[in-house]
Length: 474
Image (tube, rainbow, N blue to C red):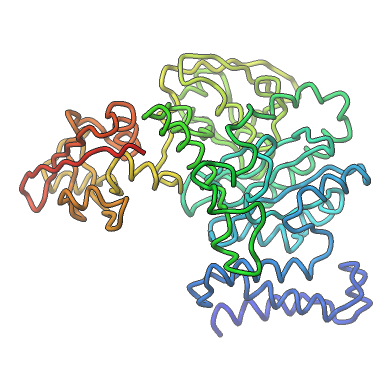
Protein backbone atom coordinates (compact mmCIF):
# COMPACT_ATOMS: atom_id res chain seq x y z
CA UNK A 1 0.00 0.00 0.00
CA UNK A 2 1.38 3.44 -0.88
CA UNK A 3 1.73 6.28 1.65
CA UNK A 4 -1.54 7.88 0.48
CA UNK A 5 -3.45 4.66 1.13
CA UNK A 6 -1.82 4.22 4.54
CA UNK A 7 -2.73 7.77 5.50
CA UNK A 8 -6.34 7.18 4.47
CA UNK A 9 -6.54 3.93 6.48
CA UNK A 10 -5.09 5.63 9.58
CA UNK A 11 -7.51 8.52 9.23
CA UNK A 12 -10.58 6.32 8.73
CA UNK A 13 -9.57 4.07 11.64
CA UNK A 14 -9.86 7.00 14.03
CA UNK A 15 -13.35 8.04 12.93
CA UNK A 16 -16.17 7.38 15.43
CA UNK A 17 -18.35 4.39 14.48
CA UNK A 18 -21.73 5.88 15.37
CA UNK A 19 -23.41 9.27 15.50
CA UNK A 20 -23.53 8.97 19.30
CA UNK A 21 -19.76 8.43 19.45
CA UNK A 22 -19.30 11.31 17.06
CA UNK A 23 -21.37 13.68 19.18
CA UNK A 24 -19.41 12.73 22.33
CA UNK A 25 -16.01 13.14 20.62
CA UNK A 26 -16.60 16.12 18.34
CA UNK A 27 -19.83 17.72 19.49
CA UNK A 28 -21.22 17.28 15.96
CA UNK A 29 -24.14 14.83 15.48
CA UNK A 30 -23.72 14.33 11.75
CA UNK A 31 -21.19 11.61 11.02
CA UNK A 32 -21.46 12.11 7.29
CA UNK A 33 -20.31 15.71 7.71
CA UNK A 34 -17.12 14.67 9.49
CA UNK A 35 -16.35 11.90 7.01
CA UNK A 36 -16.84 14.33 4.13
CA UNK A 37 -14.64 16.93 5.79
CA UNK A 38 -11.87 14.41 6.49
CA UNK A 39 -11.88 13.21 2.89
CA UNK A 40 -11.68 16.77 1.57
CA UNK A 41 -8.97 17.54 4.12
CA UNK A 42 -7.01 14.43 3.15
CA UNK A 43 -6.86 15.28 -0.53
CA UNK A 44 -6.71 19.08 -0.26
CA UNK A 45 -3.65 18.96 2.02
CA UNK A 46 -1.58 16.76 -0.26
CA UNK A 47 1.23 18.49 -2.15
CA UNK A 48 0.33 19.78 -5.59
CA UNK A 49 2.97 17.46 -7.05
CA UNK A 50 0.90 14.45 -5.89
CA UNK A 51 -2.53 15.62 -6.97
CA UNK A 52 -1.54 18.01 -9.72
CA UNK A 53 -3.44 20.78 -7.94
CA UNK A 54 -3.12 24.24 -9.34
CA UNK A 55 -2.82 27.24 -7.05
CA UNK A 56 -6.42 28.06 -7.95
CA UNK A 57 -7.61 24.61 -6.84
CA UNK A 58 -5.68 24.77 -3.58
CA UNK A 59 -7.27 28.08 -2.62
CA UNK A 60 -10.78 26.87 -3.48
CA UNK A 61 -10.26 23.53 -1.69
CA UNK A 62 -9.23 25.40 1.45
CA UNK A 63 -12.53 27.29 1.42
CA UNK A 64 -14.44 24.03 0.89
CA UNK A 65 -12.79 22.47 3.93
CA UNK A 66 -13.59 25.35 6.23
CA UNK A 67 -17.20 25.50 5.13
CA UNK A 68 -17.50 22.04 6.71
CA UNK A 69 -15.67 22.98 9.92
CA UNK A 70 -17.54 24.65 12.78
CA UNK A 71 -16.16 27.51 14.83
CA UNK A 72 -14.04 29.33 12.24
CA UNK A 73 -14.69 32.60 10.44
CA UNK A 74 -13.19 32.67 6.97
CA UNK A 75 -11.56 35.83 5.58
CA UNK A 76 -13.68 37.91 7.95
CA UNK A 77 -11.53 39.62 10.54
CA UNK A 78 -14.04 42.40 11.19
CA UNK A 79 -16.67 39.86 12.21
CA UNK A 80 -14.12 38.22 14.47
CA UNK A 81 -13.66 41.40 16.48
CA UNK A 82 -17.42 41.93 16.66
CA UNK A 83 -17.90 38.39 17.96
CA UNK A 84 -15.09 38.91 20.50
CA UNK A 85 -16.82 42.01 21.90
CA UNK A 86 -20.02 40.01 22.37
CA UNK A 87 -18.40 36.87 23.80
CA UNK A 88 -15.57 38.35 25.83
CA UNK A 89 -13.12 35.95 24.18
CA UNK A 90 -9.74 36.88 22.70
CA UNK A 91 -9.35 36.82 18.91
CA UNK A 92 -7.05 34.31 17.18
CA UNK A 93 -6.29 35.18 13.55
CA UNK A 94 -4.45 32.51 11.54
CA UNK A 95 -2.83 34.01 8.45
CA UNK A 96 -2.00 31.22 6.02
CA UNK A 97 -0.58 31.45 2.51
CA UNK A 98 -2.39 28.38 1.19
CA UNK A 99 -0.34 27.74 -2.00
CA UNK A 100 2.91 27.67 0.03
CA UNK A 101 3.84 24.20 1.27
CA UNK A 102 6.04 25.37 4.15
CA UNK A 103 4.57 24.75 7.63
CA UNK A 104 1.67 22.84 6.09
CA UNK A 105 1.81 20.11 8.76
CA UNK A 106 1.45 22.64 11.56
CA UNK A 107 -1.44 24.20 9.68
CA UNK A 108 -3.15 20.82 9.32
CA UNK A 109 -2.80 20.24 13.06
CA UNK A 110 -4.46 23.58 13.79
CA UNK A 111 -7.43 23.16 11.49
CA UNK A 112 -7.93 19.49 12.36
CA UNK A 113 -8.07 20.41 16.06
CA UNK A 114 -5.08 18.41 17.26
CA UNK A 115 -5.69 16.94 20.77
CA UNK A 116 -3.09 19.20 22.40
CA UNK A 117 -4.91 22.37 21.37
CA UNK A 118 -8.47 21.18 20.75
CA UNK A 119 -9.67 22.21 24.19
CA UNK A 120 -8.05 25.64 23.83
CA UNK A 121 -9.58 26.55 20.46
CA UNK A 122 -13.08 26.92 21.90
CA UNK A 123 -11.85 29.71 24.18
CA UNK A 124 -10.98 31.91 21.19
CA UNK A 125 -12.87 33.63 18.43
CA UNK A 126 -11.05 32.08 15.47
CA UNK A 127 -10.47 33.62 12.05
CA UNK A 128 -8.69 32.04 9.11
CA UNK A 129 -7.27 34.63 6.71
CA UNK A 130 -5.69 33.30 3.51
CA UNK A 131 -4.70 36.63 1.92
CA UNK A 132 -3.68 40.07 3.11
CA UNK A 133 -6.24 41.85 0.91
CA UNK A 134 -8.14 44.35 3.03
CA UNK A 135 -6.32 43.72 6.33
CA UNK A 136 -5.47 46.71 8.51
CA UNK A 137 -1.67 47.10 8.44
CA UNK A 138 -1.82 49.18 11.61
CA UNK A 139 -2.82 45.98 13.43
CA UNK A 140 -1.26 43.27 11.29
CA UNK A 141 2.46 43.86 11.41
CA UNK A 142 4.51 40.65 11.49
CA UNK A 143 7.27 38.89 9.59
CA UNK A 144 5.72 38.92 6.12
CA UNK A 145 8.03 36.14 4.88
CA UNK A 146 6.17 33.58 6.96
CA UNK A 147 3.63 31.26 5.32
CA UNK A 148 1.89 30.58 8.66
CA UNK A 149 1.40 33.29 11.30
CA UNK A 150 -1.00 33.58 14.21
CA UNK A 151 -1.85 36.90 15.83
CA UNK A 152 -3.79 37.18 19.08
CA UNK A 153 -5.89 40.23 20.02
CA UNK A 154 -8.15 41.61 22.67
CA UNK A 155 -11.51 42.71 21.25
CA UNK A 156 -10.37 46.35 21.55
CA UNK A 157 -7.46 45.67 19.14
CA UNK A 158 -4.70 45.34 21.74
CA UNK A 159 -2.19 42.74 20.56
CA UNK A 160 -1.43 39.90 22.97
CA UNK A 161 1.29 38.38 20.82
CA UNK A 162 2.47 36.74 17.63
CA UNK A 163 3.23 33.13 16.75
CA UNK A 164 5.04 31.85 13.66
CA UNK A 165 8.75 31.73 12.91
CA UNK A 166 10.77 30.28 10.07
CA UNK A 167 14.50 30.61 9.47
CA UNK A 168 14.77 28.23 6.51
CA UNK A 169 12.75 27.86 3.34
CA UNK A 170 11.49 24.36 4.14
CA UNK A 171 12.85 23.38 7.59
CA UNK A 172 10.76 24.78 10.43
CA UNK A 173 10.84 22.11 13.18
CA UNK A 174 13.35 24.10 15.25
CA UNK A 175 11.15 27.19 15.16
CA UNK A 176 7.51 26.10 15.61
CA UNK A 177 5.49 23.12 16.83
CA UNK A 178 1.93 22.24 17.80
CA UNK A 179 3.09 22.05 21.42
CA UNK A 180 4.61 25.52 21.15
CA UNK A 181 1.41 26.92 19.68
CA UNK A 182 -0.57 25.39 22.55
CA UNK A 183 1.79 27.05 25.06
CA UNK A 184 1.39 30.37 23.23
CA UNK A 185 -2.41 30.04 23.33
CA UNK A 186 -2.31 29.28 27.06
CA UNK A 187 -0.08 32.30 27.64
CA UNK A 188 -2.55 34.50 25.73
CA UNK A 189 -5.44 33.25 27.84
CA UNK A 190 -3.53 34.20 31.02
CA UNK A 191 -2.89 37.67 29.62
CA UNK A 192 -6.55 37.94 28.68
CA UNK A 193 -7.67 36.99 32.18
CA UNK A 194 -5.47 39.74 33.64
CA UNK A 195 -5.94 42.26 30.84
CA UNK A 196 -6.39 45.35 32.98
CA UNK A 197 -3.14 44.65 34.82
CA UNK A 198 -1.01 43.69 31.80
CA UNK A 199 -2.37 46.20 29.28
CA UNK A 200 0.52 48.71 29.74
CA UNK A 201 3.10 45.99 28.98
CA UNK A 202 1.30 45.17 25.71
CA UNK A 203 1.32 48.69 24.26
CA UNK A 204 4.67 48.25 22.48
CA UNK A 205 3.39 45.18 20.64
CA UNK A 206 1.55 47.55 18.31
CA UNK A 207 3.88 48.93 15.65
CA UNK A 208 4.47 52.27 14.00
CA UNK A 209 2.09 53.83 11.52
CA UNK A 210 2.57 52.11 8.12
CA UNK A 211 2.88 54.06 4.84
CA UNK A 212 -0.56 52.81 3.78
CA UNK A 213 -3.43 51.38 5.80
CA UNK A 214 -4.22 48.40 3.56
CA UNK A 215 -2.02 46.33 1.19
CA UNK A 216 -4.07 47.11 -1.93
CA UNK A 217 -3.21 50.80 -1.39
CA UNK A 218 0.55 50.38 -2.01
CA UNK A 219 1.52 52.21 -5.22
CA UNK A 220 2.65 48.98 -6.89
CA UNK A 221 -0.70 47.31 -5.99
CA UNK A 222 -3.14 50.03 -7.03
CA UNK A 223 -5.21 48.82 -9.97
CA UNK A 224 -3.92 45.25 -9.60
CA UNK A 225 -5.62 44.11 -6.40
CA UNK A 226 -8.91 44.73 -4.61
CA UNK A 227 -9.81 44.64 -0.92
CA UNK A 228 -11.37 41.16 -1.26
CA UNK A 229 -10.56 37.95 -3.08
CA UNK A 230 -12.28 37.35 -6.40
CA UNK A 231 -13.95 33.95 -6.02
CA UNK A 232 -16.01 34.65 -9.15
CA UNK A 233 -12.85 34.86 -11.26
CA UNK A 234 -9.21 33.78 -10.85
CA UNK A 235 -9.10 33.77 -7.09
CA UNK A 236 -5.43 32.81 -6.79
CA UNK A 237 -4.39 35.77 -8.92
CA UNK A 238 -6.46 38.12 -6.78
CA UNK A 239 -4.51 37.24 -3.58
CA UNK A 240 -2.01 39.64 -2.08
CA UNK A 241 0.51 37.30 -0.50
CA UNK A 242 2.17 38.18 2.79
CA UNK A 243 5.59 38.47 1.18
CA UNK A 244 4.18 41.00 -1.29
CA UNK A 245 3.47 43.30 1.65
CA UNK A 246 7.11 43.06 2.71
CA UNK A 247 8.26 43.73 -0.84
CA UNK A 248 5.98 46.75 -1.11
CA UNK A 249 7.27 48.24 2.14
CA UNK A 250 10.79 48.07 0.71
CA UNK A 251 9.67 49.31 -2.69
CA UNK A 252 8.29 52.54 -1.20
CA UNK A 253 11.62 53.32 0.47
CA UNK A 254 13.87 52.23 -2.41
CA UNK A 255 12.00 54.39 -4.93
CA UNK A 256 12.27 57.35 -2.55
CA UNK A 257 15.86 56.94 -1.31
CA UNK A 258 17.59 54.68 -3.83
CA UNK A 259 18.86 52.46 -0.99
CA UNK A 260 17.60 50.29 1.84
CA UNK A 261 18.62 50.45 5.49
CA UNK A 262 19.57 47.34 7.46
CA UNK A 263 16.35 47.75 9.42
CA UNK A 264 14.47 47.03 6.17
CA UNK A 265 16.96 44.50 4.81
CA UNK A 266 16.97 42.35 7.94
CA UNK A 267 13.41 42.23 9.29
CA UNK A 268 12.60 40.23 12.42
CA UNK A 269 16.13 38.97 13.21
CA UNK A 270 16.22 35.40 14.46
CA UNK A 271 17.46 35.02 18.08
CA UNK A 272 19.98 32.41 16.93
CA UNK A 273 22.20 35.18 15.52
CA UNK A 274 22.73 36.15 19.17
CA UNK A 275 23.50 32.52 20.05
CA UNK A 276 20.07 32.14 21.60
CA UNK A 277 18.38 28.86 20.66
CA UNK A 278 14.78 28.82 21.81
CA UNK A 279 12.75 25.68 22.58
CA UNK A 280 10.05 25.43 19.84
CA UNK A 281 7.84 23.37 22.18
CA UNK A 282 7.71 26.08 24.83
CA UNK A 283 6.40 29.64 24.88
CA UNK A 284 9.67 31.49 25.56
CA UNK A 285 12.21 29.12 27.09
CA UNK A 286 15.89 28.93 26.15
CA UNK A 287 16.89 25.48 24.88
CA UNK A 288 20.57 26.21 24.32
CA UNK A 289 23.10 29.04 24.36
CA UNK A 290 25.94 28.85 21.87
CA UNK A 291 29.45 29.17 23.32
CA UNK A 292 31.25 32.52 22.95
CA UNK A 293 28.03 34.11 21.72
CA UNK A 294 26.35 37.40 22.57
CA UNK A 295 23.76 35.49 24.60
CA UNK A 296 26.42 33.65 26.63
CA UNK A 297 28.26 36.90 27.39
CA UNK A 298 24.95 38.30 28.61
CA UNK A 299 24.62 35.60 31.26
CA UNK A 300 21.72 33.69 29.68
CA UNK A 301 21.57 29.93 30.22
CA UNK A 302 19.67 26.90 28.89
CA UNK A 303 16.43 26.43 30.79
CA UNK A 304 15.91 30.13 31.46
CA UNK A 305 12.32 31.15 30.83
CA UNK A 306 11.97 34.65 29.43
CA UNK A 307 9.34 36.50 31.44
CA UNK A 308 9.77 39.86 29.69
CA UNK A 309 11.93 41.39 26.97
CA UNK A 310 12.03 45.18 27.09
CA UNK A 311 9.08 44.87 29.50
CA UNK A 312 6.96 43.01 26.93
CA UNK A 313 5.66 39.53 27.93
CA UNK A 314 6.57 37.08 25.12
CA UNK A 315 4.35 34.20 24.09
CA UNK A 316 6.75 32.79 21.45
CA UNK A 317 9.96 33.23 19.50
CA UNK A 318 8.07 35.59 17.20
CA UNK A 319 7.55 38.00 20.11
CA UNK A 320 11.30 38.06 20.71
CA UNK A 321 11.80 38.81 17.03
CA UNK A 322 9.28 41.65 17.27
CA UNK A 323 11.45 43.36 19.89
CA UNK A 324 14.67 42.73 17.95
CA UNK A 325 13.00 44.07 14.80
CA UNK A 326 12.47 47.45 16.45
CA UNK A 327 15.96 47.81 17.94
CA UNK A 328 18.49 49.91 15.99
CA UNK A 329 21.32 48.25 14.06
CA UNK A 330 23.88 50.06 16.18
CA UNK A 331 25.59 49.33 19.45
CA UNK A 332 22.71 49.07 21.90
CA UNK A 333 21.51 47.25 25.02
CA UNK A 334 18.20 45.62 25.84
CA UNK A 335 16.79 44.06 28.97
CA UNK A 336 15.64 40.48 29.44
CA UNK A 337 13.87 39.32 32.59
CA UNK A 338 14.18 35.60 33.13
CA UNK A 339 12.80 32.98 35.50
CA UNK A 340 15.62 30.71 36.65
CA UNK A 341 14.79 28.09 39.25
CA UNK A 342 11.69 30.07 40.30
CA UNK A 343 13.72 33.23 40.80
CA UNK A 344 13.31 36.26 38.54
CA UNK A 345 16.53 37.87 37.34
CA UNK A 346 17.32 40.75 35.01
CA UNK A 347 19.94 40.30 32.31
CA UNK A 348 21.20 42.88 29.80
CA UNK A 349 22.17 41.98 26.25
CA UNK A 350 24.78 44.22 24.60
CA UNK A 351 24.59 44.32 20.81
CA UNK A 352 27.46 45.47 18.59
CA UNK A 353 27.25 47.73 15.55
CA UNK A 354 25.73 46.04 12.48
CA UNK A 355 24.44 43.10 14.52
CA UNK A 356 21.41 42.64 12.26
CA UNK A 357 23.69 41.84 9.32
CA UNK A 358 24.52 38.54 11.08
CA UNK A 359 21.10 37.27 9.98
CA UNK A 360 20.50 35.30 6.78
CA UNK A 361 18.29 36.58 3.95
CA UNK A 362 18.62 33.68 1.53
CA UNK A 363 15.50 31.74 2.63
CA UNK A 364 13.10 34.69 2.42
CA UNK A 365 10.63 35.01 -0.46
CA UNK A 366 11.16 38.78 -0.45
CA UNK A 367 14.85 38.24 -1.25
CA UNK A 368 13.96 37.38 -4.86
CA UNK A 369 13.13 41.03 -5.43
CA UNK A 370 16.37 42.05 -3.70
CA UNK A 371 18.29 39.73 -6.02
CA UNK A 372 16.80 41.57 -8.98
CA UNK A 373 17.95 44.94 -7.66
CA UNK A 374 21.27 43.97 -6.12
CA UNK A 375 22.43 40.99 -8.20
CA UNK A 376 20.78 41.41 -11.58
CA UNK A 377 18.64 38.32 -10.97
CA UNK A 378 21.31 35.92 -9.69
CA UNK A 379 20.84 33.28 -7.00
CA UNK A 380 24.17 32.55 -5.25
CA UNK A 381 25.21 29.63 -3.05
CA UNK A 382 28.33 29.17 -0.95
CA UNK A 383 30.88 26.58 -2.05
CA UNK A 384 31.72 23.73 0.32
CA UNK A 385 35.25 23.41 1.72
CA UNK A 386 35.83 20.47 -0.62
CA UNK A 387 34.76 22.50 -3.64
CA UNK A 388 37.03 25.35 -2.58
CA UNK A 389 39.98 22.99 -2.22
CA UNK A 390 39.40 21.47 -5.65
CA UNK A 391 39.48 24.97 -7.19
CA UNK A 392 42.38 26.19 -5.01
CA UNK A 393 40.24 28.95 -3.52
CA UNK A 394 41.44 29.88 0.00
CA UNK A 395 39.11 29.96 2.99
CA UNK A 396 37.65 33.33 3.97
CA UNK A 397 37.66 34.57 0.40
CA UNK A 398 34.65 34.99 -1.84
CA UNK A 399 33.43 31.90 -3.71
CA UNK A 400 29.71 31.87 -4.55
CA UNK A 401 28.29 29.55 -7.18
CA UNK A 402 25.62 30.90 -9.53
CA UNK A 403 22.69 28.52 -8.90
CA UNK A 404 20.18 30.39 -11.03
CA UNK A 405 20.19 33.20 -13.59
CA UNK A 406 16.96 35.08 -14.20
CA UNK A 407 15.94 34.81 -17.87
CA UNK A 408 12.96 37.15 -18.06
CA UNK A 409 12.70 40.94 -17.58
CA UNK A 410 13.23 42.64 -15.22
CA UNK A 411 15.21 39.82 -13.54
CA UNK A 412 17.62 39.20 -16.45
CA UNK A 413 20.27 41.94 -16.25
CA UNK A 414 23.03 39.51 -15.24
CA UNK A 415 21.88 37.12 -17.96
CA UNK A 416 22.19 39.85 -20.59
CA UNK A 417 25.69 40.54 -19.25
CA UNK A 418 26.67 36.93 -19.98
CA UNK A 419 26.64 35.38 -16.50
CA UNK A 420 25.88 31.63 -16.60
CA UNK A 421 24.73 28.97 -14.18
CA UNK A 422 27.67 27.35 -12.33
CA UNK A 423 29.88 30.41 -12.75
CA UNK A 424 31.66 31.19 -9.48
CA UNK A 425 31.66 34.78 -8.28
CA UNK A 426 35.07 35.55 -6.73
CA UNK A 427 34.87 39.35 -6.69
CA UNK A 428 32.00 41.81 -6.49
CA UNK A 429 33.02 45.38 -7.32
CA UNK A 430 36.25 45.75 -5.34
CA UNK A 431 35.38 43.17 -2.67
CA UNK A 432 36.57 39.58 -2.49
CA UNK A 433 35.73 39.07 1.19
CA UNK A 434 31.93 38.79 0.89
CA UNK A 435 31.33 35.19 1.94
CA UNK A 436 27.53 34.91 1.76
CA UNK A 437 24.91 35.91 -0.77
CA UNK A 438 23.41 38.00 2.04
CA UNK A 439 26.68 39.94 2.35
CA UNK A 440 26.76 40.65 -1.40
CA UNK A 441 23.14 41.87 -1.45
CA UNK A 442 23.79 44.17 1.49
CA UNK A 443 26.99 45.57 -0.04
CA UNK A 444 25.26 46.20 -3.36
CA UNK A 445 22.26 47.96 -1.82
CA UNK A 446 24.42 50.09 0.47
CA UNK A 447 27.19 51.08 -1.91
CA UNK A 448 25.88 51.14 -5.49
CA UNK A 449 23.58 53.90 -6.61
CA UNK A 450 20.84 53.36 -9.21
CA UNK A 451 22.26 53.35 -12.77
CA UNK A 452 25.80 52.70 -11.48
CA UNK A 453 27.66 49.69 -12.89
CA UNK A 454 27.74 46.39 -11.02
CA UNK A 455 31.00 44.61 -11.90
CA UNK A 456 31.81 40.99 -11.04
CA UNK A 457 34.76 38.67 -11.54
CA UNK A 458 33.86 35.05 -12.31
CA UNK A 459 35.51 31.67 -12.58
CA UNK A 460 34.18 29.59 -15.48
CA UNK A 461 35.77 26.21 -16.12
CA UNK A 462 39.06 27.41 -14.66
CA UNK A 463 39.12 30.73 -16.59
CA UNK A 464 38.63 34.12 -14.99
CA UNK A 465 36.17 36.40 -16.79
CA UNK A 466 34.39 39.70 -16.07
CA UNK A 467 30.80 40.87 -16.43
CA UNK A 468 28.94 44.07 -15.64
CA UNK A 469 25.44 45.56 -15.76
CA UNK A 470 23.66 48.60 -14.35
CA UNK A 471 21.80 48.65 -11.07
CA UNK A 472 18.10 49.43 -11.74
CA UNK A 473 16.40 52.60 -10.54
CA UNK A 474 13.53 50.71 -8.91
